[in-house]
Length: 145
Image (cartoon, rainbow, N blue to C red; front, side):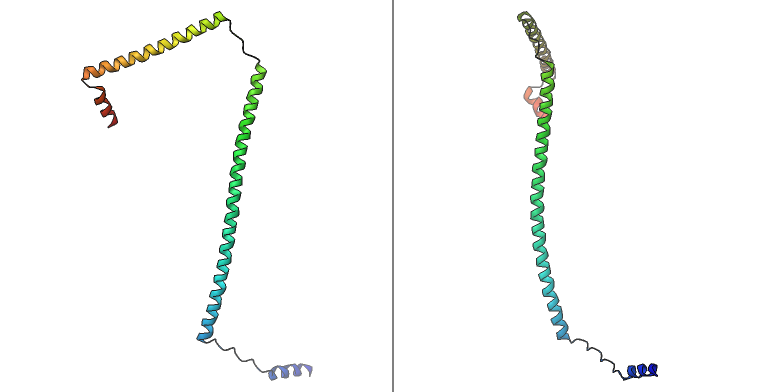
């Protein structure tokens, strides 16, 4: 009989009435409320994005400064290593006055030879221009075209 009591109780329970579908005004009010909520959320997220971008820019600047410092430090290390190897080589051998004079003469002779070669090239160019009947101004105009 206990089983029959439970079923009897179930039938006695009144079914809940269905919830009424909201009216147009209620739905419009709910949409307005949702719009306000979303606008507030968007504003908050924009602030967060701006704050994050500011932090990101600061970190990028710090990174750039660190990279510059690294490059400078590496260059300094290279200079120090070069100075160390240079010091290990010892002092350069000083030339005697006769050897310096010979070296100076050789350098001057090399410079004179280079000047002669340049002069020969210039003379050849001028001869070619004269043979063609062109002036230097006309040649420059043609080259600039």
